[in-house]
Image (cartoon, rainbow, N blue to C red; front, side):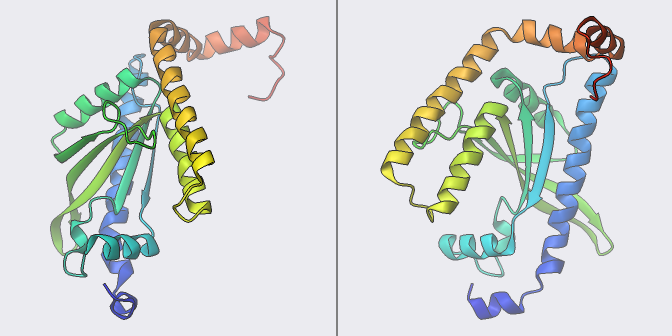
Length: 226
């Protein structure tokens, strides 16, 4: 993909289906969380975010991976949704929820939790085919869903920022510290998993409006802004 052909490309028309895909997936997955909470059940989904890859990022990846304007729709992560969970075990629960859905088709899974990258990156990636309806008919869009714990996401966000700062070549000393931090994040996930049941019970109790009100009154916080 050359700069001239990319400049002439109708990016808005090309990206519209991906914007629609991200929007629909976020609504549906947030709806799953709401269903759990309405039934007073623990939700494996903490929150959901999403984005459509920026044009410059698409162009760079297209050049690096050899995509052309005719094959660029084969890129798997133009539409990206991230599902945040509290515990590593929740990753597998969310994965099962995705596998059972009839409105999407999983075409590839990448387990970077059991097989973490050398850098220390951990996450679970699911590539899906997602059908959307447009005024020109239905079509299938590729999208990537990442499932991460909060600790995994914190580390990945910092690593991404540092990679951007150093132009993709992070100094060795900083890289070593990141690797150490990755081990610490994994240890945090393991420790939280060990007391998962206690945490879940406490959260379900505290999610009750009356329980929160009683707690604030007992601790002299009933006049605080929450």
